[in-house]
Amino acid sequence: MTKWWLIGAAAFLAVLLIVSIVLALTSKEAQFAPGTPEHAVQTLLRAAEGDDLETAYAMLSQELQQKCELENFADGGRYRSRDDRDIRATLRDTRLVGTTTVVDVQVTRFRNSGPFDTGESTYGRSYDLRQEDGEWKFTEYPWPYDYCLESDE
Image (tube, rainbow, N blue to C red; front, side, top):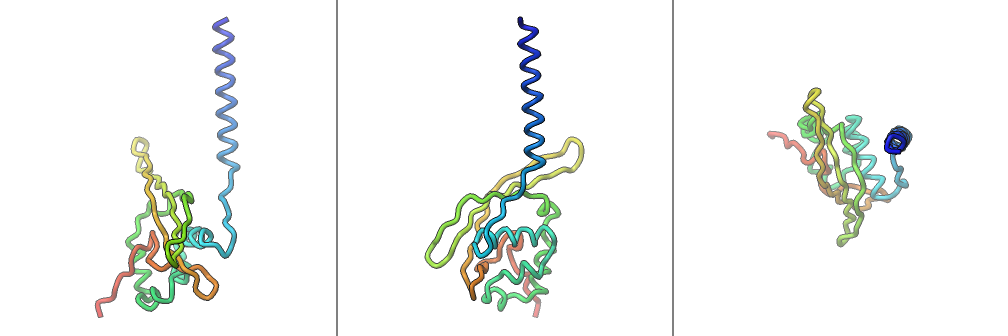
């Protein structure tokens, strides 16, 4: 009797493992509707992943663009970690604070430095956005572009 119970439990675990793998491989990234602040954050993170500085810069508010030229924004982005491309972002909350919409995201960063040095870290990030000319724009430098490298002039 014990032998059959162990065989049944092993078969159940094998099926559960196979289902988990299939779901992980076939699950798709959530697509937020264009014209929403969540879509703006998603677009920014995709731009960062692909090193598309022009797209990320275009998403800054006019005020931030006036303070920071594209070249300086690009220089600030050079100090980003290689690990900034190995992330998973999960939407946590969207809320209105005064005239600003705040999108809270949980970021999980994955690290693999060898066969015995793998890990992940999870932390929160907030993005402040407002609508300008019908588009959502960041009103503070958004992670992973936390700042603009100012020129020495």
